[in-house]
Length: 224
Image 1: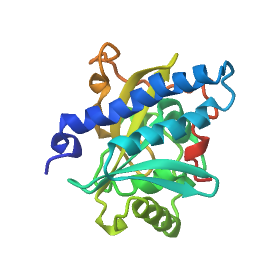
Image 2 (image 1 turned 135 degrees about the horizontal axis):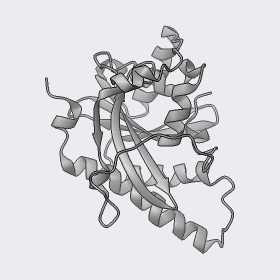
Image 3 (image 1 turned 60 degrees about the vertical axis):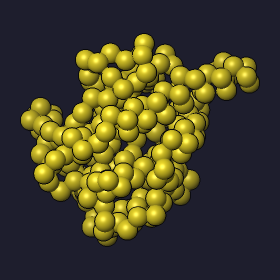
Image 4 (image 1 turned 180 degrees about the vertical axis):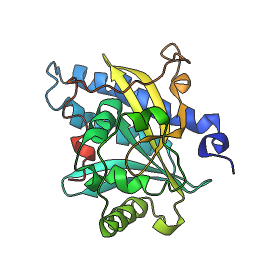
């Protein structure tokens, strides 16, 4: 059976990258300039609002999943019945190493990926095991599916789009399927080449590293 990446047209991948680039490289800078903002306090949280606005404008099946005070964007791809969510590379690296990651939405979303195989180099990193509560997984999956008006039983898989933004430039975009333990699987695809030129470097590969650039970057996507 063909994978998500084999069945997904370049136009869709380019659309996702365009939404991210416009939010991060254009609109965020315009907002900061218009309001004479020089400090970056709270920048990581606020830019998710701009990212969600851009995704909503480009994706037909778009929703925002809210859990308590936090929310995150969800895109539904009906051709394969997949849900797509988004995260920075720093946040993914942080989540993989958390001992209590089993209660994060990403573990619930990744439980849709029943048939994935972890990359060998990921296994050697020996991430902490995710303690997954089936009832919580079911509830979380229902919330994600319902925000895009889809029956959760219809969803066949989940894609995480991981991106890197440095110095207000979108430098890397990679799409991947994760295991329930948040290991990166063998089903990954680098979408960096779909960022509009001259920003793209086709051979650029994400190397997730924990940095302090945006230590609050993903608070809006936390389900804690």
